[in-house]
Length: 113
Length: 115
Image (cartoon, rainbow over all chains, first blue to last red; front, top):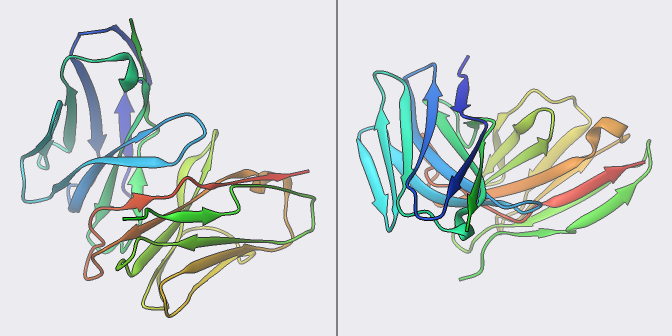
């Protein structure tokens, strides 16, 4: 059974610092891994999707890496801003999952001005 | 391009009632998934539909059901509501539909409170 873990559960950084968020999963047989952002009381916003054959994806200040063999992904957010404050979730889609993403519990990020 | 639309956004029901939630996917997306989010359990997969067929189902009781229409819009129904069904119900759509569903785009959710 796939298990996804995100550490730390919460993180507070001053504005301008780089953010490093970690995600680990137990079963390396995945199709893709996706990072989301969730603001309080809102839905999920897709940030980056990494296919299993890829090592990383970049979008603006965001960079996500994937190491399938070790079951790890890292989301880097450069030069953090107060608007980056949110909960960040990672999710993996397994080999026969069809729409079933296995989510981590998320990392709650606070960026202080 | 419109995103995933869920209605209603908020609703209050009492135990024993039933509820129907609606989801309109992004135009052109044929895969629709449903998730339940609670503080204690996090995000849990309910079911996924593609071309009006349920292809995958999570570990929820039979009180939870869904369907998809020919225009890809989807509904989920919860019968005989229990207090523990209080949650944010999220719908997601995806363009792909083969072995995997690709990037998922979520709606804002329907917040259900059961009294």
